[in-house]
Amino acid sequence: MPVVYVVIIRSIFSFFSLMLFVRLIGKQQVAQLTFFDYVVGITIGSIASTISVQLNENTLASLTGMAVWTALAILVAFLNMQSVWIRKLITGEATVVIENGKILEKNLKNIRIPIDELISELRSQSVFNISDVEFALFEPSGKISIQKKSQKQPLTPNDLSLQSKYDGLPTNLILDGIVLTDALQSLNLSKAWLQHQLSKKNLHSFEAISIAQLDTKGTLYVDLMGDKPYYIIPTQK
Image (tube, rainbow, N blue to C red; front, side, top):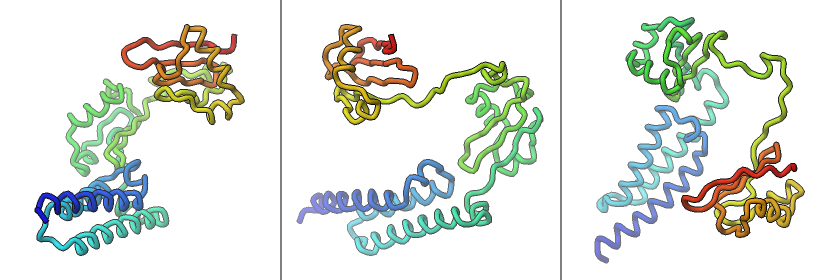
């Protein structure tokens, strides 16, 4: 068999094996990616690439290596859930880098983060004055968490003793031109009701709609395919 065909077959096998092992590891590895998780993922991917193109490597041995790394990743994730001590050992803890407007240089040095990178991270969170920060922490994932001083935080309806209405998640009614009938039924709405709302803006084809969302206030957001405009349609009137 020509070498190129062997590579194609091994690549397909490696691809689906990697997909299976990643599914077994679970979403936690992606949703809360730490440096340790990153290294584990890179290693498993490297073994998968070895199966794909290193024809002199034993496929079964490489696959076994992938399985062992995957099993260890699952074991570590399980231990993280069971033990705070192990979680601190493997994942680490959040490090306070600003306290009451003061940069804690010693803590920055411990995690090897330069001050200019800290300032850049603050700007990414719309914080331009260090004195506005009560606490800033670098999380184990590398992200920064910021608590502004109370006098620098935006006002909320609760601060003004104002009543506010419930604002839940919007419901998708149309995606890529397809009406989601289950979503309509969950809201006790019909396709005819949706057609009536769309007709207010002379929209008569579901297929021309990229997405249609109904929020909890009864407002229908409709975005058309391509570079066409979007519409906001009140449905309560």
